[in-house]
Image (cartoon, rainbow, N blue to C red; front, side, top):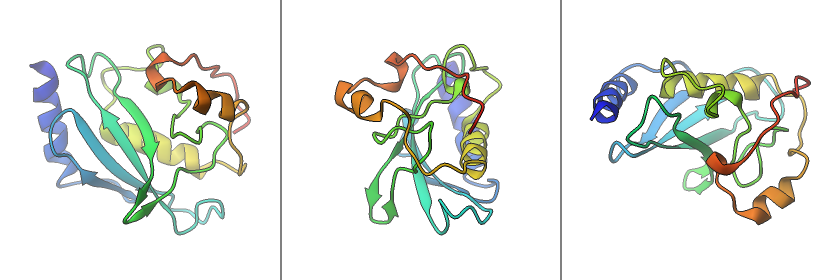
Length: 153
C-alpha cells in the first residue's frame, strides 16, 4: 500500500513538472513506467539522441530500489546509449540502483537526473568490459554483482 501511495504522488509530480531533458513516456499503471532522457550539453556521443528508461517497481518501493534499465524503441527511435557502465542489453551499473547505494529518499526524478548526469560526463564511446558475457547470461540487473570502484568515467 505504501508503494502505491508514494508512486501515485511521484506520478502526479512527473506529469506536471520535470527537469529539462527528462520526460514521462508511459505510465499505464504503478508497476512499470517509461521515461525519456536527453543529454542537454553538446556531448558528441549523445548529440540529438533521446534514450528510454524502463522502471519496474515492487511492493517494497521506496524501501527497495526499482529495477531500471535502458530499453530500445523504434517509434520513436530510442537506442541504448554507449557508455562504460551501460551494457548493450540496457543494464546500468550505478550504485544508487543497488541495495548498497539506494536510499528511500531517491525517486524516479532523482534517478533520471543521476543517469542524465552520468551520460553528460562520459567521454568514452564504449561498452563495459564483459558486455557480451553479461548479455549472454540473461541475468537481470537485480541479480548482478557490480564493482562500483571505476571512477574514470
